[in-house]
Length: 577
Image 1: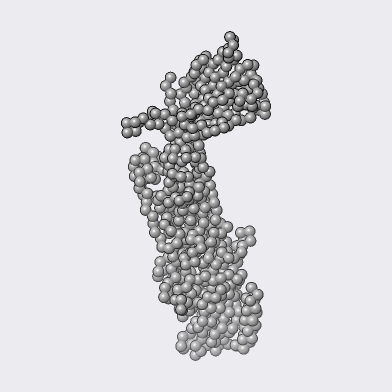
Image 2: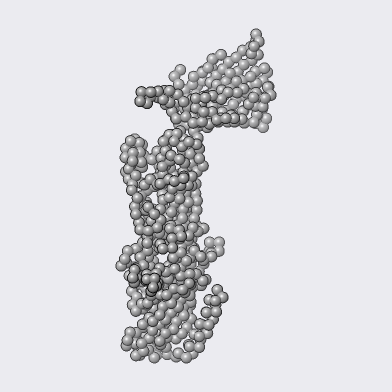
């Protein structure tokens, strides 16, 4: 900064000296209409600067040329693309005669050095010179900056201004500043959120296809993102377009005013948005649309890479994929299956259509897993949304992961559960209650290749026992969790006294068992004075509670058991009496 100020002081002093000596020569003023640039970008274009000049009284017959050096403040590197060769670097930044709505003539490519760009020898009047006191206009365009390096305070946009030093044959040396900022730096990405999240039950199939009757499944969840300001999302552009000054802004393009040397300045792609999904459980497939239309006619399309040319992935058409009508019908190819590695997958969308009004996109996310394929409950799948590509210096556009990058929570996978009600258990007044919970997730009721197999996919888990008596809640025994997982085909057993703390006579009431697996069934056997002539016993099956809470009728017999019909976690299970 000190070096820049010294240059500014020296050049301004020279301008003062030469201004006093150069009566009758060309003089200029500068104006610009500021634009917003993305704080996440390394190559966003600032507004075009228009130099309104007068040739002066001595213009006749003088071959006038104009040299200009543009400095940016606060100091920020100019990152306009190089369209020359390594031996003869030429920047896409260009200046020449012309006004907004027209094309440049007598133009010169810029030479970039850090936060400045110089243009040399812009010919004002050709070989014959320019008439005295003649107005002409010079426009500077295609200055792109590393906006990501500009500090912003609490999200308040930071203004970027230009100081232009002019000199040349027949030109008055001067330091000119634009009347307003040429750009304001602010975040370009916003509105990141997840909606419609689900808690997918491990015991049920998580499907993406359309149910019979044509009623489509909703996405498992959605991920939304939006333009934080108009023109934050941009299309690529094509060669030969943007040949009129200002069209790069009107057309919402990553490419600037079209220029060509040994190559042209067409951007590598349109704006791209990257969604990184993490915490995807094993055996889960994830799908997103190949194309999606957002608000205000905005369109994004899925591409295979965050860098390089657009390349559409192949649509998913396997049985049961999104768009199919059943698990044995083909998907319609409107979505793509993302590659999952170590629980992570990435979707890259490129903006292909955009309008003046800011666009919002709500991307549906489809998950697919067979019943019982996810081995254990998981926390939520996360989605991290940012611009793309990040850190690709040879790519236009090129971004950083800035403060707008956000992570949101999607759907999760939860254990299936069975809730059992034991209406009365006691260890008071000589009574004791024996407790048993069976995990019936293993059987030989199915057949495969002529051999008996289990008809269900069982899960191991524990049961939380909670107690509700006649006393106040604070005096009820503490909740108890069965000490080891109950595997399919096994039982957990215990006595009420051992569960509530080993002291007989301290509880009488009902007990609820929350088991984090399906197909749990409960039984209690209440005894009194066993081994004595007055001894007695009775038993019953626990009631199974559904959600919303419903109960099944239980048959209680002295010395016997009951056989209720039960429904749990949305999965029917019938026992014939």
